[in-house]
Length: 525
Image 1: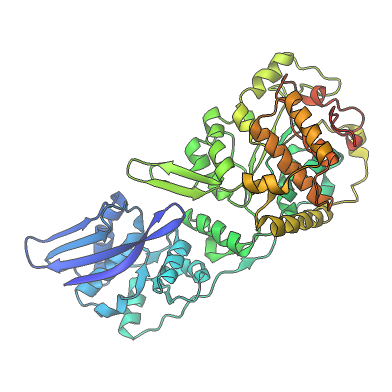
Image 2: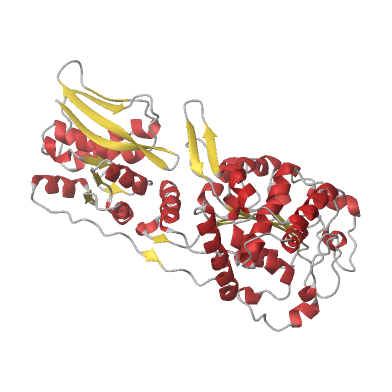
């Protein structure tokens, strides 16, 4: 007899159908084999299933047992195959009605006592089952997570005994309810940051258009404080974005008790992170920090301290919003549409360009330190600003009248304008064709941009990123057209590539921090 039930294999954040076919025959010697390109964890399922059956007082028949995982050329990884293999065996030996498992997908790991334990990926599995008009059997801890997929038939037993009794009609398992949708966490307030008005303005522009941002300044100037306040400026996740983010987090096993949140992800990996930790991969490909920050913020503090290999591995996702992990037998893709926020000191000493302080090693220190970050990587960062040291006069200032709530309202207005005009995407995500249409500056603005591009050595990518930021500035001001003022402010927020210098020496900032504005030869409002 051949019994069959469905389960899933994961390719990135997506689930693919796998048919578990169980055959028990008298021919040949007593064996228990699993075929279908299974990894070590799947091959060990036979021992967990054997022990779980023994705990229930069941014994495997002394026959030839073959488990086929189809399609055979699709790699199978993980312990979630335990439950479908066990259910197929129970049906094959008539311990449960064979037709009771028809129309179900199943995922779950078995303990030796028959308990069904939590596994990652319940949400993508439920979404696939629902799309194929089938139900899902999953562990009880995954029930609230799977319930978010829709009105599909859903069983979430604690152990095999409950599941067998349900199929025999002696116990009824109720459908689990979706987990909580967490309320928005009260954001950190921009009022806590004294001075740094230029940096606050850049943060607002970055939030409004979804632009990447680099802050360069000495230690203690408030770079990390500013980055931590960016999520409070961003609009909550839309329904589609929430599903995309939750699918990635489900595969990574980060959805506790099935709770979802409309807060945008905020990931801040340490600079010792490996390339596999950043972009995903490893022995069993898992999403990395870049994918876990999908539709949210990826904050890289101490940017030059990351290895060059790790930083350059982010160049592709910064352009495409996707990461592809190549393997000999498969290519796995994860979504990675994140907003990059980076911070760095102007030099290794941290004092280059600070008012009244000279770097001990001179200009060479700043040049060598900043050269750790490649030019192509820097070219992908839309806004690059200096964050000067906070002075005692800045600290003595009263809190700003504008806080996170006021700035977030302007950001929400600008985002609404963009979504309506751009077809649901931010200015940072606009295609090149669409950008040429919506970001055409007036004559004065075009002249200024061409002149500045030649003087500052802007690449073609840098040229268009200036236009993207200018489009956001126009949206914030409520202007339908891009004027010279918007181009000038956009240029003032981008570092020149010619003649690398650092700190206030480059921007010409003087006076108190509260009143400092970048000095740019092309910025004359």
